[in-house]
Image: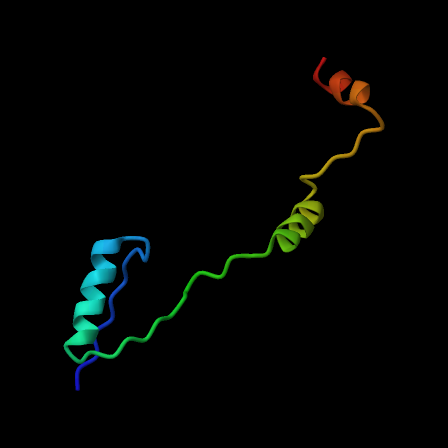
Length: 67
């Protein structure tokens, strides 16, 4: 038995229907998610550690920064 690996955009309905046809003909489907998205809290913690977050006492302090 041969193994064929396809990479495609899962949002593309044409490819999704093509995969459904191949499964109907006897192919086996194995889905693998290669992208792991970080949770929003993990992204926020990473931003804090990288120094991309600033704090200001008031909005006036924030606007003084741009003057």
